[in-house]
Length: 289
Image (tube, rainbow, N blue to C red; front, side, top):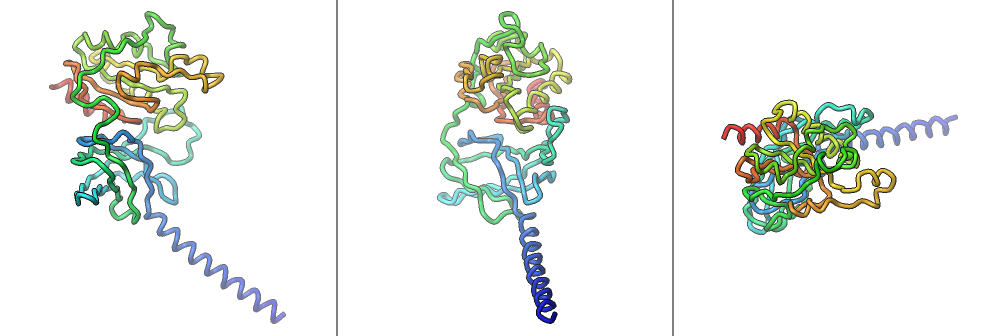
């Protein structure tokens, strides 16, 4: 009995030690954030920069966080505040139990290219490494928008022009080429909604629909599907044919949104998700210019 009692006491002590150590690590993990970049096409100059943050409890959704960017070779440091942008409410992801509600967004002006580090102020000890290219792959802000000949309802049935399950016909009424002739601001989304399996990507078409409700015919809104053979993809995604129009804009299969003013100049561009609130901010500047 004495041995059994001693064994029980020892076991309790061991469990208590593990519990204590575990609690310490949990506290550290809660303050240590990891990030996943939503922006990959980063270059010298002003970049719209966005990312998702997580800790041991899941996705991190505080209203604001500060980021410190550092170029160790040239001893350059940039401190930027990022604001949290919410995803629109949608029934597209009814089983989303991960608490993924949005992402962090700000503008960052990189004066030099090369390897940079990213550190979340007071939230992580190990910096994230990223590369800043001398030139972006995607077409740049200030450039003239390509007059791409995109498919419309005049030549293609809607079920062959988009993978959106609930499409807005107005998004397919006019080609980019013709939209650039009517002196209205133009908002273009390049994406394939049915094959965006997370809110970071899939909910972008919902933001565009909110913009359509808000601005109506005062702007052109165009959705260009990433793939040409949208019906064939339903049975075999490996057979996908990438829309050649994407090359005009210097982009690949990643989702992009471009805002063009009435002079056909690109004034803003957004890689992956951009909220209705953020789009409206830039649209108001273009409309009231």
